[in-house]
Length: 143
Ligand code: AMP
Ligand code: ZN
Image (tube, rainbow, N blue to C red; front, side, top):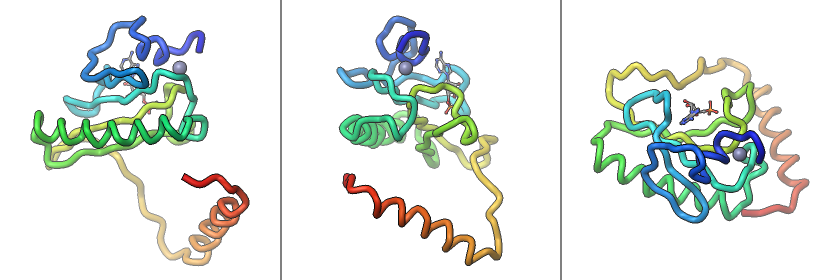
């Protein structure tokens, strides 16, 4: 997509520290990493977020994440790894081209990923789950 920086990076038009590339995606070092070794999996075809990502690409991204996490464990020996991605500005997405973060973690590191758990609202929890369940039942899309 015109003007999309990740389209340009994925296509190789803007240089990046690439650790893996194939016909569908590119894996690069995040330019402002949460920890050293923080990588991004970027599909070559533009999709703003997970809902726009074709199912085959979503599968490929996840299979690549599995490989990259294994390689990260071998290469960097982290104590843990976060695999995450943000959908929408309210969820922290700043680049509106789908990407998955792979972040190596070390005990006592300063990376902050988290939330304050909500307490004591069992009916609201069940109610919100029910709304998603109903919406799921209304679509016949299956993985
Ligand atoms: P998100 O907040 O999930 O949209 O993540 C966007 C990520 O892209 C951030 O972690 C940025 O540091 C990273 N980023 C932005 N521009 C570049 C770039 N030119 N090369 C590599 N990473 C980038
Ligand atoms: Zn794009």
